[in-house]
Length: 427
Ligand SMILES: *Cc1c(COP(=O)(O)O)cnc(C)c1O
Image 1 (cartoon, rainbow, N blue to C red):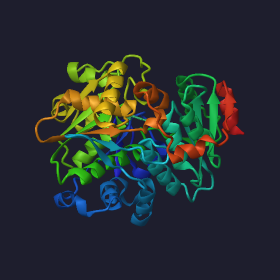
Image 2 (cartoon, rainbow, N blue to C red):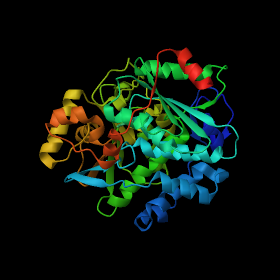
Image 3 (cartoon, helix red, strand yellow):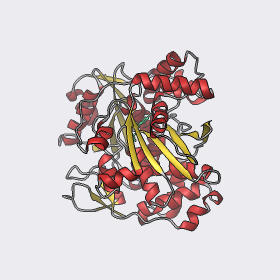
Image 4 (cartoon, rainbow, N blue to C red):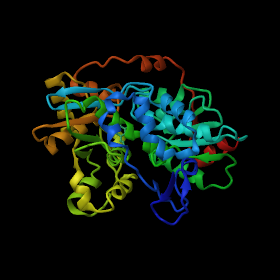
C-alpha cells in the first residue's frame, strides 16, 4: 500500500517509509491511496472470527507486502493481547472499555503497533533510531511501554515537571532499559517546542523519529476497537452509534476508516470538551481554532486537532457529506462532572472525565428507537484519580498493573534548556 501526503507536494511513499518518516516532507499527513471494503460475507460472519483474525483482515491491506503475513500476525497478536469489552450502562447505552492494556489508556494499541512495526523495519540496521516524544500525560506512558525492549530503538520522553499525574509519572520513569525520561522545568508547550527544535537541528547526531498520533502506524490500528465492539453487539443491535471523546481526532477518524471497510456503523459523534473547534466548524462551516483551554479531560485539550484533515478527506472534503454520518458537540467541566455523577448514581459505573464527555455526546445526539449507543472509555478512572474521587466521593482501588509500578523508583534527568536536551542526545 502506498500513502500520499494530504498537502500533495511530496512523493507517494510505501507503508515502511510513511511509518519511519511520520510526517511527509511537505509537512502533510500521510493518507492511504485506497481503502478496499472487506467482503460482506466476512462482516456478516464476524462472530465466527477471533479478534486476531479480524485484526489481520482489517489491517493487512494497509501494510501490503512490506511485512510478511507471519510477522504481521505476530505484531497484531502482541498489540491486542488484552480485552476490549462493551459493558452495558443503560438499556440502550454501553461503554467500550479501551483501558485494559498495560498502561490503561487506549493509546496502548497504537503505540504498541507502531513500536513493533518500527522494530521490524529497523531490525537489520546497525544504528539505533531514537524516538523523541513530548507528553502531557498518557502518550508518554503508552509509547514507553510499547517500545520497551524493542531492539534497535531508543526512546527519550520529555514531560513537564509537576504537570503530569503521579501514576503517569511512574509509568514514564520506572521502566529503564531502552526508555529514558527527561523532566523539563516548564510546561507541556516547552517540551513540545524542544522536540520540534531537535527535529530541525542538523547538529543532532542521533537518527530521530517521532511517535505522535499523526503516524499512520499509531492512527490506523485504532480502527480495530470498532470491529471488536461490533463483533460483541451485532447479534442484538443493528443500528450502532459511536460517541468518541476526541482531542486530536485520531481515534474517531480510524473508526470512520472501519466504516469505509464495510463495518455497518450508523453514526459517529465526536464529543469534545470546551476546546470546540470542530463542533463550531460543524455549525458555521468556519474552521477557526482558539487558544487551547485547560479542562478536567486534559488529554483532549487540543484546539487544532491534527487528524481532522483526515476526517474531511474521508468524506471527500464535503461538509454536507460529513454531516450525514458525523456530528460533534462540546461540553464544559461542570457538565462533565454532572454526567460522571449521573452515570454513577444510575448504573454504579465509574466513568473517567473523557468517557463522561463521550456519554454526554450520546445524550445530546439523542438515540432513536432501535439504536444502540456506545461511548468509548479511553482511560481507566485511576488515571484521573483526584478528579474522579473528588467528583464521586469514592475511593478507586488501584489495579494490579498500577500498584506494581507505584513502588518502583523514579529515574529521570532534569533539564531546563534546549542545549541540555541537545547535549543529552549527542552524548
Ligand atoms: C488521547 C486521548 C483522547 C483523545 O484521542 P484522539 O485520538 O486524540 O482524539 C481521549 N481520551 C484519552 C484518555 C486520551 O488519552
